[in-house]
Length: 132
Image 1 (tube, helix red, strand yellow):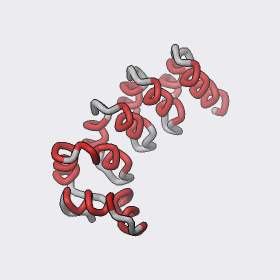
Image 2: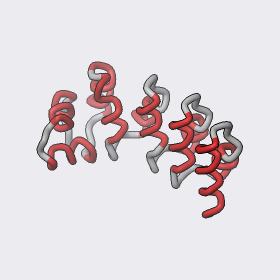
Image 3: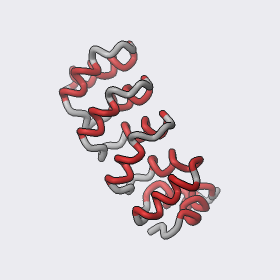
Image 4: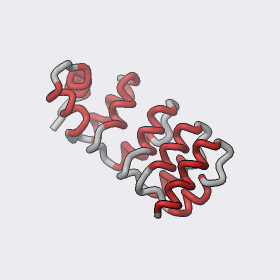
């Protein structure tokens, strides 16, 4: 378990593959994730990348100012359907495209994205709908 924001940053910046893996996969208390988000903005994407972040952190990062962070959240299989609905309306086409590719995106969200103004988003959603 990652116990401090500083430990997360050290693991993320490490050249040791095992430490890098820990930054991507290990749990941390919600307070640690919040501290990283608030004091280390350069690591918000990597918090979103972590496979074990709690739902409250997923929810917080779904509204992040950085579209790359929101796109990373939109790609998460653990992203709740309500957040995928929110992210499907995002101004950034990369975020909407990640929703369209998300294996857990609800059919209703894919149907909306199938009519997206961005051809690449619409095509991804239509492909997902066609594949069942």
